[in-house]
Length: 364
Image (cartoon, rainbow, N blue to C red; front, top):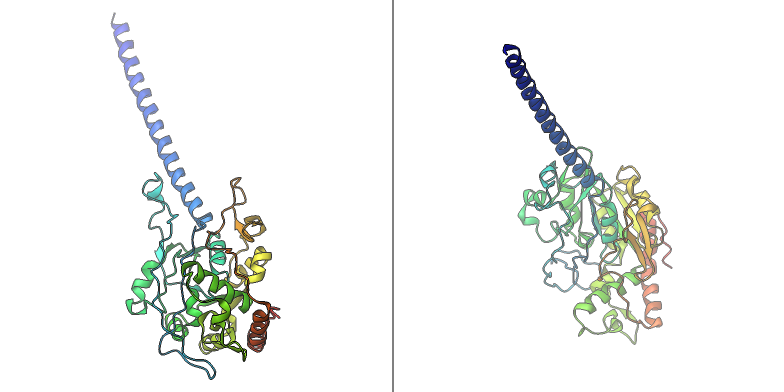
C-alpha cells in the first residue's frame, strides 16, 4: 500500500513538472513569434514605405515676394494669395494595425539632406513617389513650403514635419516653388551648405501649357492661353511677367542658385525622359544621392490611358498605382503660331540653360 502511495505522489510531481515545462515552452514560442512579427513589420515599412498619393497638392499661381529680383524687360509678378495646402492621405502605419507599436516614431527626425526644389508641372510628384519606394529614402508627402511661406516658423518647426529616419537613410522633401523664390537659395544654404538639390525640368512651352491647364481646371473663367501669353498679340510681344511663362526661363532662376551652390550639388532630371525612361532617370538620381540602385524598371508600368508610368512593387500581383486625376489632364488646343512664337522666345534662354548645366535637353 505504501508503494502505491509513493508511486502516486511521484506521478503527481512528474505531471506538474511536465505541465510547467509545456506552459513555459508555449510562452517562449509566443514571445518568439511576436518578436518576428515586429521584425517583419519594420522590414515591410522600410523596404516599401513609399506609397502613391491620390492627388498632388497644387500650388495655384506662382508666388513672388516684393523683394524678388527683377530683370530688364520683365515687369514685377502680381502677388497672389497661396491656396490652402490640399490634405493628403496618410499611408503610414496606424494605431489600428496590431503591429503599429513596432514602427511608430522609430528613428530620429532630421533636417533634409536633399530637396526637390522645382519645377512646377515638371514631374516633381512622380519623381518623389518613385524615390519613396527606396528603403533608404524617407520623404514628406505634402509640400512644406518652408523656405518661401513658413520660414518665420523656424527650423524646429520644419524638422518636426520630417519623417523619422534610421542610420543611413536620407530625409527629403519637395516644394517646386523654391526654384523661383529669390530668397530660397540663401535660406537653404544657411541651413545646410552641403545639401543636394534636384530639379525636374521639361520643355518650357509644354510646361507653361500644363500650368495653364491646371489653373483652368480650377478657374474656368480665366482668359485663353493666347490672351495671357502676349502683351501685344499684333506685335508678337510675349508677356514674360505671366507666371506660367516666367517659371520656364530656367537660366534666370538657376543664376540665383549658382551664387550659393556648386553644380556638383545639383542634379537636373529631364521631365520628358522621366516619362519615356523612368528607370534610366531614377538610376541617375540614385547615383547622385549616393544610393544603391534599388528602384529599377521592375517598379514601373506604362499606363497608355494616363500617358505616363505608374509605380508597382516587383513582387506584387495587384494593379500598379498611378498618380491621381490631377495628372495627365488633357491640354487645350493652342494655336500653332502661338507655340512657334513661344519656342522662339525661349530658345536663347534654353541655350543659356544648356550651357550653365552642361546638358542638352533637346527642346528645340
